Image (cartoon, rainbow, N blue to C red; front, top):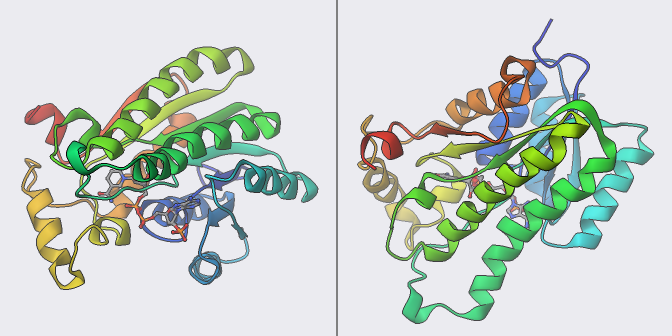
Length: 252
Ligand SMILES: NC(=O)c1ccc[n+]([C@@H]2O[C@H](COP(=O)([O-])OP(=O)(O)OC[C@H]3O[C@@H](n4cnc5c(N)ncnc54)[C@H](OP(=O)(O)O)[C@@H]3O)[C@@H](O)[C@H]2O)c1
């Protein structure tokens, strides 16, 4: 019997990277998983790779009406949720204060913060007592990386929301935790390189900030997400779990 047998999970941003790795791990542990993302083809391919217990629903978390449609669809399927991994997000490099535009600010906050807030809010009516909500933070929120002000601020905001939600939702039997990846070799990270041919160099450069001297494989982040999503972490809420090769704790 798997750790998530008979559980139903929602993973936002699950077509690639960390979200896909988590969805894959959830399915391997016996869960039925709803996967979301904006690009239909990537999403369908991801769900197909995971088999019958994976369902793709195309969705943009930054659009509250689209989020309503997502949860209506899950309810129409006759399902409730035990796990919400609100992971959809990303950012752009090279946004120092002096060249930051309101549009770029709103875009990143709209996906990472507003998208996560309303994903969790709109999931609440479907969440079973005993359920687990996991957010995706970032080790960059503890560091001062030039050009990452907006992105790292979105992740700092999520960290604070998770503390407050842990208190607000405990009476409903829900736990809220944040997984904090360090540099992780995903299409999202590689996409930060201005020149795709230099993506490997970018990953290497970012990895040099970790004592372990490498980037994470998305599956290593998924292991931590599984722990936070499962009953193995039943007495843990409001916490952040760093999966960052020691980046934040060793080189603060
Ligand atoms: N990789 C790292 O080094 C790292 C480190 C710390 C934190 N993180 C965080 O980890 C999370 C996953 O990132 P990743 O590295 O795995 O990147 P990724 O490979 O680019 O995956 C991001 C996923 O989110 C989806 N997505 C993006 N915007 C969305 C939206 N508005 N609505 C719905 N889905 C959306 C993407 O699909 P579509 O584009 O098709 O929508 C994709 O499935 C993000 O929150 C990121 O900030 C990553």
